[in-house]
Image (cartoon, rainbow, N blue to C red; front, side, top):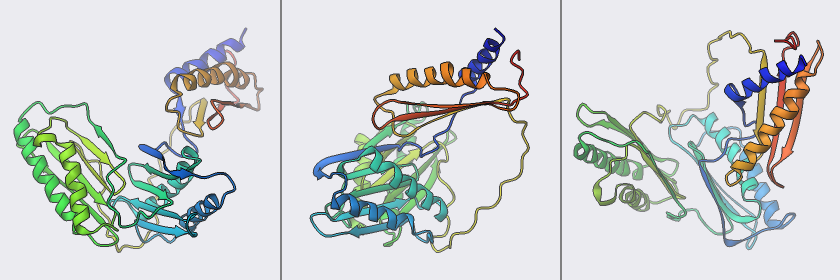
Length: 342
């Protein structure tokens, strides 16, 4: 059949040129749903207060800060929330990151009164207890690069230790809006180290200093490491270093938000076939089932139905449920002039 050639063509694009777009939000770097302090139910007062907290954040479009703290309601249904962006992030990008967080985190933690989620550029946490001004180092997550330093390891550790200690001092001296520091240094002719340290600005100088110091010791046990990069994500502070530049130039904290400059116009020839899917929730733990259901949906349904289209439209959509909270949506389209025998 001639139609099989179009299906085969689309199938090849699925294998080699698949466009994966998460139309909702990207997954967190990490998140924790904390059961220790209780759960809430749908239509409860706590849920209403939580939604009010999210609305308070999302409606605040005049962004002139990278730190937010809100308390909504009365005990025992009070919700306390903190949102924090990196000091290298533009205000409008901070607003977007925080709004992505308030959409994503309650989806991942639909019943827990306390939860925390980290993106690369921002952190969101909320709880039924008081969290403002409290130094907390758990729960935390440490990520380490698999790439190793092979030359001049002793000098690497000396430079790294000095750099992180300097950033600990600088970040802890910040004010009530920003406790943040970035810096870099080189170790001989072998390479450079870039680092980032940040505390929630509601911490005291001493608590910030201690929080980052504890993470330095956890990241560099016994004062020595050969990992070219590592980071620790915690509720009250974050620490990261890499052998490449991973942060942005720091905008002035007092600068008002400005419209992003228009990118240069570049004209590209559009492809003949578009294939897109997105997932409504984190798929960790369901990777195998996700891959099976996604491939079946895209290959056996969407690819076939799109190829069956006429000369005016070759387009198809479908969806499949992974679980009660996880759905894959897919879309396939060919330009109508694409011949079935192409």
